[in-house]
Length: 85
Image (cartoon, rainbow, N blue to C red; front, side):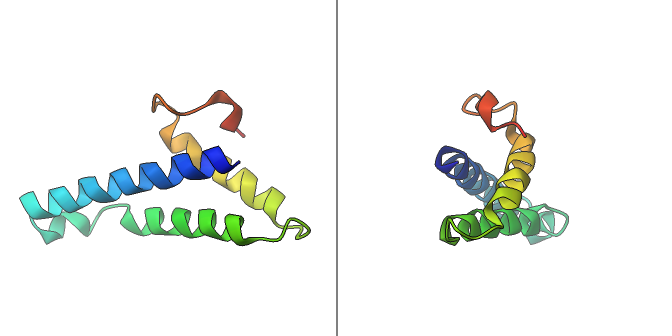
């Protein structure tokens, strides 16, 4: 799961950089319809998962949610089959 979390955070950072470039090139309005809020939420989920105690009952559901969200990047060359839900 740690590999998936690192992969997701790296993709989120890539997307954030792309949006920052677009905002600088086009205008700040380019970000209004972006999926930046969703990227922030996914990053929060990844951080929450890392911070959860293994005895907590929530990590299994959160891990599944992260796997589903990771499917957004299934075409990325670093995405691994074992991360599929």
